[in-house]
Image (cartoon, rainbow, N blue to C red; front, side, top):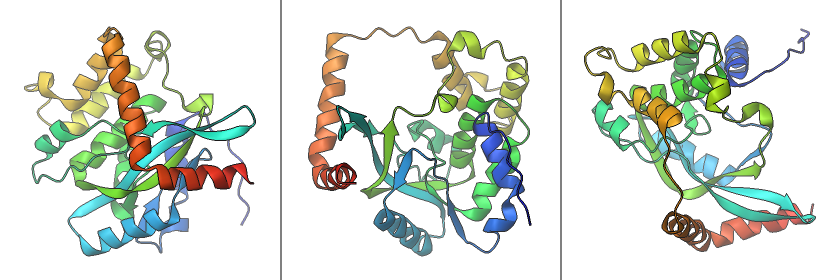
Length: 247
């Protein structure tokens, strides 16, 4: 069987390609999405699998993440990287309220839920909304667990093709409004009645109308969180960075 090379323009193309290659994953119970600038810790992946094996009411889980960069000819810790927090209420609306808006698709998923989400995403074409759609569908479909371990390391900077578009460029996408309507309809069946409380609507409001100024206090809080994360996970982070610097 020959596989033809296809041009990938963004996340929507990637998700669609995974759907088309379903037969590769058909025999597996779990799946994990990884990009070429990511590193998933094998022991944490095994821990995630063990958790899902023992907790059938959860659809996905992961742990904590951090960003590393290559500067001055060496790799170094740059910052923490937010992965999904635990959202395990039976009520989906409460899960949306507690969800920290992090990327869900790096988590280890039960395959049937991963592909259930991707099939919904084929209804739209916008790359940024595809990421948003995946995240909120994951929270809608089931419970997610944050484990107490370093799960993912992500290299900075990420390829430009995956960057969140500037809002002034994003709005020029002719299909965006149609895609937004599709996403909101699929996340909240009562969106016409309860639009102001819709989780996706809140995300879009922040994307287009957030003019929050960065203050000295907010910078201090950011750096405090950054180094507190490092101190709490320094052994795993240092071992990872040292191994990369010796490659």
